[in-house]
Image 1 (spheres, each protein chain N blue to C red):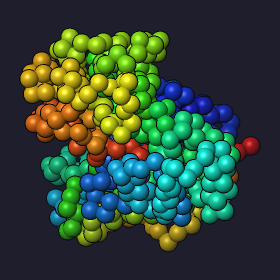
Image 2: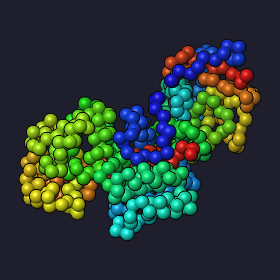
Image 3: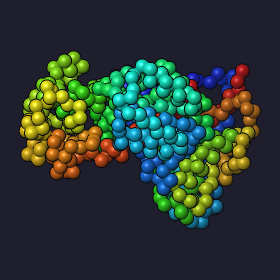
Image 4: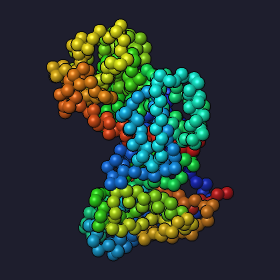
Length: 187
Length: 309
């Protein structure tokens, strides 16, 4: 589905393809540093862009450490706390995680961290598969405005925003548009 | 995915578009996976109340809806009433009033009269799911049949599907016909002429009275239960003759292509519409249908019960 092109005057570019690549590569380095037992790590993306970001980070880890890290998919739609309040339901996806999760470190991967409710739903989904040894959170953009006590472990870019503003992320594989992040202000 | 779900009720497959049917099946994929988790329960419908209102007896459909609701964290009330004590109009209105008093969010209705779910749906705020109404429709059964075919064969379009048995009195057959045709399958109905009248051809299906001509071409064979309790003499000469002419015996099963799927909505009359060995054979997907029924019903409850009303 094509999104409407932003009005150029209202859109502030935040990251281009190079900046996104550097940000994800740094996250890959930080994950390697923070997890001596990389074979226990699972990068689990939240559909659809989180899944793609997890794949890219896994590719960087492979390039740097020559190790194939496991990846997965976490559906959050059926774990959300706002079902029945929206006229349109989020599309549900199948969750794919390696089991058993015991002794594994699951890193939740998403494009934008905002209220923290999606991350909470993702933790709920992970719990229904078993008791992971550790759960961490990696995001391309942290835009602030948390509504829950949640903080990311790995961040591509911290970006203080106003609630009126919107962060737009595009990735080639999921959106069929060049990699880009920009900020939109509601006029 | 362009399809969107906007309906509060599921009354039949006749009114759904091909996109809507496909959307339910794709949603069911996600819910099927929930059944493989260590904790087979998600909070999607937490705080919602589901009423299983079964005016006709049913064990498997009611249990399947109940388990589907449990796995979505909904609370479930079961109400069943003896058919004999009901007269349609008055009682359904009373039912509607009572359910509104209970603040039910989802009503799963099985009723002997065609149109009963529609009657209720237009009178209550709750979502109404048709769990079988008379000889009209049984949409979740057809959806789980479609899901099972799609899962095993990777597609539904262009497959030859034979539906065999008592078509005239079968809501399962009707819902299957609507769903299969919308998704592009070729449907052939087979059975005694009293139970498979030529009028069905108007729906866009073929009608055949010779099972041995149909079986070799079939990709899917769906055997309907011979409903002893409903058969009247004038429609149905006798079990022995039925088995001889239309039963899927061991001998007849040899006519089937090796990859032809054998389906049955249950409960099976072993030795009547299907031979016991055939029902338990490698081509049989009868137990897959039961497993998939749970996923499909979770998807339907999530979609109809989850939208804001």
